[in-house]
Structures are given as structure tokens and as C-alpha cells.
Length: 184
Figure (cartoon, helix red, strand yellow):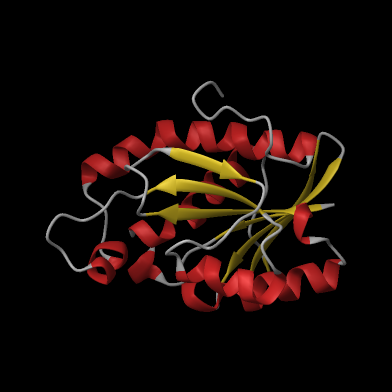
């Protein structure tokens, strides 16, 4: 069993914000594989299923971004998962919009949601970072919590096709090492 966690903020007001790129990416993946977020568990919305013989749990924490670790910790404790058995999908302002990066472990960088997860379960979990870009002359909080432009939203369909392939690679291999995000 593995878990894929998409970080974001719950509620209609946040649906199309930069900070919800993780939610949006796993929503796209869930739709592609016929999984529905129909349960509430682990302080989040959950979709469960089997993909190519692998039991998969998709989690969208509803603890709000800065407390994402509470939900992730509850999930791995209840499912008895090792942190290496999870993939966290998250926005990253240090990458250009739509750029992707994968890592098997590491620091939280500047991301408060990742920081909370690292504090609760350590650094040894997989991450898929989706570039959010840096705001020009705008407060960072206003940028990540503001709605994306129509142009950015239109760009996301091709970005999410790539994130689907990366997540599927993780499902198949239970690791992100070896993924070339430019060729996937």
C-alpha cells in the first residue's frame, strides 16, 4: 500500500489558488483512474483503490496548509506506512510556473506545509513539486492564496498530464528515483 498526498487548503475560496496545486494534481490523477474522494479520514478527504495491483490511498488534508503534517501523520500511523511509502504533491514558488521536480527526501525549503510534515514524520518521504513561480511585486501570501489567471489554469492540463505519469511511476515503482521530469 502507498499513499499520495496532495497539499492544499479546503473550501471553495481556495479551489483555484496556487497553494492548491497539490489538490488539483491528485484530483486530476483520481479522475483519470476512476477514484472518488468520497470518504473523510485522517483529517482529510480520501479516495482509495487499486491501480495495476497496487493499493493506493489518495489524501487531501483538510487541516489547512500549515498543519498538513497532522493529517499525513494520522494517515501513515493508521495505515502503518513508512514515510518512504508516501508521495506528497505540493506547489513550489522556487520553481517557474508548471516546472516539475521530484525528490526522495530532503528539507521543506520555504514551504510551511512541507515544514509541518517534516517536523512530524521526518524528511524521508517522496515529493513532487509543481512550480508556482514567484510573484512580481506582490505579497507572497496574497499570491499563493489568490486565484490563478485563466492563462495559468489553461496551462495546467498539460502539467497535470505529466504529474499523472510521475504519480503512476511512483505507484508502479514505489520510488521517485530515476524519473526524468523532462522526459516523462
